[in-house]
Length: 355
Image (cartoon, rainbow, N blue to C red):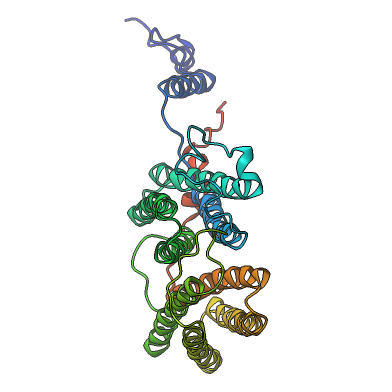
């Protein structure tokens, strides 16, 4: 009877279908990865990279509000008299439009940068390590809002800076900021429902603060559309309201917002709340007081352009802080480490070599 092969012989016997050693397995995995890369597959990203994009969207959307205000306050609203071109037959400003054309054209360039970041967000949401329908929908909402903003901007130029379209342009920017801030916060959290982290009464107070803040912003656009800064030195379409009356109404709304903010300050000190909610409440009080001081000063000084610009920037900051305060009323679990890491989390660790 033939002798059975030893275990040493079986281990050392070569296989016809390829090298079964750890080095061979590693080479096989590497070749498969190279073939996958050659197929043009899109990379997988993590929430860390995604949040960088969401933060950029918040910063850029806030900046475009300020630069848009600079366009209006310098009388450059029609520095590019056509849209999307900047004059007949050209997308860049003519020398005849001088500094006003350059300011308006610069604002349009910033809008293009904003559009690229906003366009990247839905794509990045589809490439996330852990698929998130909420992040995708918020990203798509931001993109659709930006498209609407671009169209509304063109209409504003075509109707020669009518104050109603200028006001709508600003208010739509506030809607986009709301979306961007919510998206940025949601991207650090896990998927699922958002339970309240505070008493229901406090959550309702935060909602009222948001509504009143939105009302104050809307009244501010009425004051702006009634005041002297039309956005162009020749086209001076205004609402036709009495500036004293609308300014008083705007101030009344600001006082209501100040009272609600003080109530929020007392509430977050008396009941347990997340630290973020307490910080946001104090930040909101600072911005509201600063806005009131700037508002009264600019009114009594005859509405100088510089103070109007500071007031617009302050309004943008106030709105962001208000949204953060409301969002801090609820808290989800943080996102997982795998979701943060992105594609690196999907690469298996190499198996240790065996003797």
